[in-house]
Length: 188
Image (cartoon, rainbow, N blue to C red; front, top):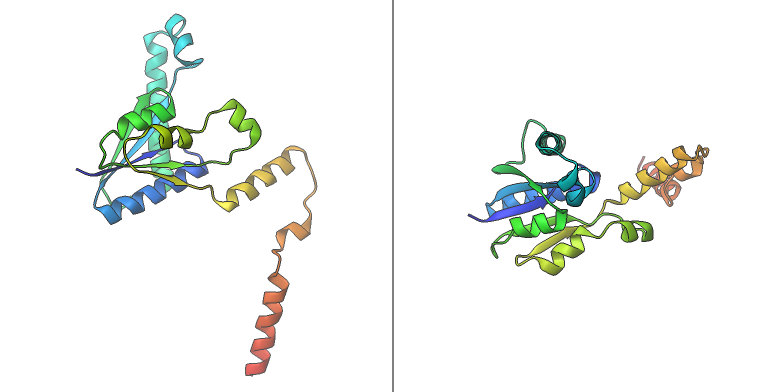
């Protein structure tokens, strides 16, 4: 069966990718497979020395809960309108997604989050990894423009900067409002 495989983390970017993957699955008549990759605290090297089976079981259960929450947040009780399966995989996100979407008929959908220079240095891009290593088509969903505005609001709150009311009005809003008023007067 044809599958649409999507990476899920619960972030706004991954929820946008999840919605796009559901739309693609509806169009293709495919199954939606939501994949959440997880690693033990400190990564795999640290888990060899200090993590016991109980810690790994807790991590696995927490990742399953996180996947369930992300699917619930994205679709609620209505669901996406296609068969959905969830899978939690121990490993790095890029490798887990590429290994899961190994059939050439699959479609792999990933969110392309905002890539600031600091993030590029600290975290490799999952989307780039998937584009370079996947054997199936990859659809990279860009971040929402609202996500950048939300991040700016968080930074403003973090630094306790006052809100500038001019930021709330969009450029051209006044012109649009004036045009509407003029048009309604002319028609009366």
